[in-house]
Amino acid sequence: MQYYIPEWDDLVSSKYDYWNDVELPNSKKVYAHEIYPKPNYDGILVSRMKIEESKSKIEKIKKVGVHKFFRFEGPIFGDCGAWGYINEKNPPFETKDMLSYYETLGFNIGVSIDHLCIPQVKSEWYYRQELTLKNAEQFFNLYENGNYSFKAVGAAQGWDLESYRYAVQELLDIGYDFIALGGLARAQTSVIIKILKNIQDLIEGKKIKIHLFGAARLDGLRAFNNLGVTSFDSASPLRNAWLGSKKNYRGLDWKGYTAIRLPFLSRTKKYQQLVEKGLFSIKELEEFEKSIYALLRRYEIEKTRSPEEIIEAFEMLNQTFTLRDDLKEDYKETLSERPWEKCPCPVCKEAGMDVIIFRGNNRNRRRGFHNTFVFYQLMQKILKDTNFEGTPYLKLVHEKDFSIPIQRQTKKIKSKINKQTKIENFFEQIDEE
Image 1: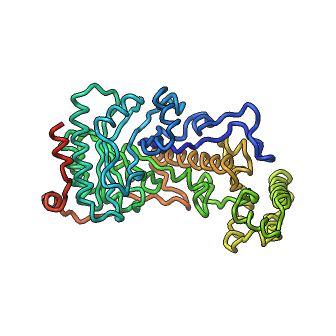
Image 2 (image 1 turned 30 degrees about the vertical axis):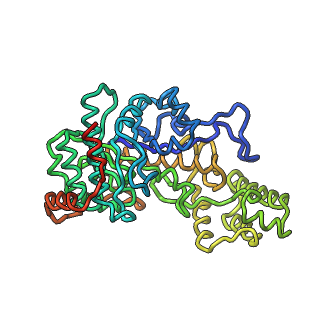
Image 3 (image 1 turned 180 degrees about the horizontal axis):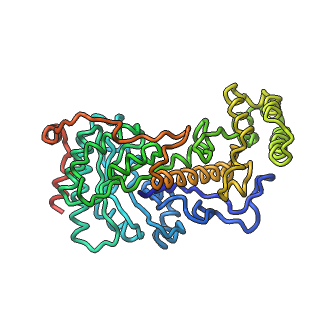
């Protein structure tokens, strides 16, 4: 199985002064795969909607291609980025243009144009599924009759066991041997396993590749592998480093630790209002930040302070910091166990305790790089060591634990699509082309 990480401009300064919070001379912006000896992922997923948010970025990519732009030699998987147009009636791209886009920019893999069938758009499920399948059919036919160097993937969208089964069957009938299941990013692992089990008889004994969009799960990894999944993607290990309220740093056994929040007070609206009210001056806020940071550094280096002292220092200025009781216990655990000292990865070796301080891009994204390192190391262990059954913080699940009622309703779904979908003249236009 291969793990693809979505590309979201995740860069840090190669040389950074943590004490003064400034980029050092001769520093440059680098990706995680430029920090680690080997990338902590097998490939990169690049969504068109994402990279086209910046006109300058997409123009640079057009000039040099995706591999040179992202400075990555491994496989790069391209998709449309359906979450970016979730509220639109139709995707903003055309099939011919997508084929040209994938080929011209140098993608290794390219997926057909899809449209999500999630609860927020329930009234459009049948319309969106059939639109996705018609796009896949046109994509495949044009691909087969063209001269393209990338691998074509058919997108499958659904909302329950049978709708996904129907989509997969249709894509197989079209001729695809590589299918990507979309819309599962927020689905429970058990639901994904049931969907995979429900298509086993369709793919068993055939050389069919299956990709899961947004569903890289360590707990379901072994089950996914046994059920024919060949790749998946997710940015969760990376982005939870700064988007999660807790468990921002992952230990080598996948135990989650809460990062210690030390924000740039003078740059935050809440604290700017305190300055405007005359409760603090900018200088006082900056001095407070510096004193707390100095205390944290002494805790790391001298090892003479206690976690309680650090927490007490945060509480001394409770007008500035509101520290919840549950965070006190979380901070105490993080400080007591000092997980960053047990990690051999380059980020933890270089940043030390700064990797668990919640403060600015250069700390937060480095913590995300570390989390991705742990994720990828555990992924390799789960796949290679059949005796490994997880850790106290990572329980593996198996496909045998999830039985499903076998109901074949393909004709019923097809009938509903014919009766309930109204795709105006879109498909007629495709046929004419």
